[in-house]
Image (cartoon, rainbow, N blue to C red; front, side):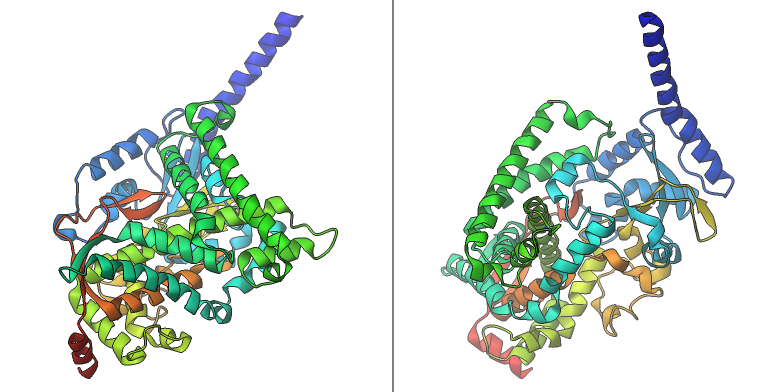
Amino acid sequence: MVAWILCSFMFLLVLRAAVVLWWRPRKIEHHFCRQGIRGPPYRFFIGNVKEIVGMMIKASSVHSCPNSSHNILPRVLPFYHHWKKIYGSKFLVWFGPTVRLAVSDPDLIREIFTSKSEFCEKNEPHPLVKQLEGDGLLSLKGQKWALHRKIISPSFHMDNLKLLIPVMAKSVVEMMEKWSAMSADSGEVEIEVSEWFQTLTEDIITRTAFGSSYEDGKAIFRLQAQQMVLASQAFDKVYIPGYRFLPTRTNVNSWRLDREIRKSLMKLIDRRHENSIESSSKDLLGLMIRASKSSPSSTITVNDIVEECKGFFFAGKQTTSNLLTWTMILMAMHPQWQIQARDEVLRVCGARDVPSKDDVTKLKTLSMIINESLRLYPPTVATIRQAKADVEFGGYMIPRGTELLIPILAVHHDQTIWGNDVNEFNPGRFAEGVAKAANHRVGFIPFGLGARTCIGQNLAILQAKLALALILQKFSFRLGPSYQHSPAVQMLLYPRYGAPIIFQKLSTSMVHQDQRS
């Protein structure tokens, strides 16, 4: 009897594995094939991962883009670039036994994110990624997501953000004073700006979102940087359910890092709990603490606060530092736009050291440059949604559980949307605003679209405009001789070999000459 039960159990396991790893993928392929949607054939268990990794290795083996070209899609998303030419703008790709439908048609994307968004949800991220981002707004779903969004949204209203300008400017000024000291002898200095901008955004986040100094958040950022390396490695592997519970070296390191991050955040939260005045403020941490104390039955727990803090420490730092880095690289590459932006800053802000909140909104050229930077080099190159029910999108029947891969980078580099100069740096295309920049309103989605648009986008753009305005007042800059234009993905888009830029202090006569011109 025992032998019969064991044999039956093993048979059921084998049968289930056969269904998941073979029969279901074949059924899905046939379903989409009938609708004219194809893709590279599914391979047992691994799907298309081997081909994807091979293409990525081949693309990254070329150290830099020829002539610093902005045509980076073949390098950054080589599998999409390759298979789109074969199968069209909609095709299937398999990450292990998980199917993803790649979609770059803007009308289809609008349905997914807006008009039929109730049929889609964020896919469950890899456990290592979820541990890094936290189980907060970035990954929550349904009513809990809606509650957290409602509580946190006031922190990111533009009127509140503008009040933070003096705090943010203080961090930027302190950074530039260090640059000035470094350039005191020769009048110029080479700075690896990606590292400096990470420290800058860390400082601003801890001051503005958590009401604390950079020293309080430094340990958390350091630990998250280590976690990010582990999470990035996970993208090159087939995800095996249950694998995260095994005591592998990666998992043990990840568990240790998560414990240390949680411990550091609890100290920060406890300190704010003890200070009732600070806890009533409108920063992220103050609002979350106040919500947790609002009633005995409050659904906001200390664990919820910890998870939200993890997400904002990670996403807030990476998004803004990447935006600043790429924008500085682009202005160094295209000095005519740097000069134009500086002329505007000097004209609008005059001789004041710190632009006012009204000044920042008047910097139209800088807004155009930042938008073009976000178009060519969006921090997130792709995003995924999952159909939570059988649904029709654009006349295609999408089965429940299908993952929808939206390659943001491909949309931003689509010639039919942006014109023949799609791979050129041309901020002028945003002269009449985002709505009129492209042939389709969904052609520009660096922060997502619809209800789940990145809540921190206003803060990221405000930080970037303020920092760049202050830098333009004091320095001119050009690319360092060692710079290699090599965009790569480590969860977010970043310059593989850093961003060495040479800064030259502007003399008073040069500033006055620019103001007169």
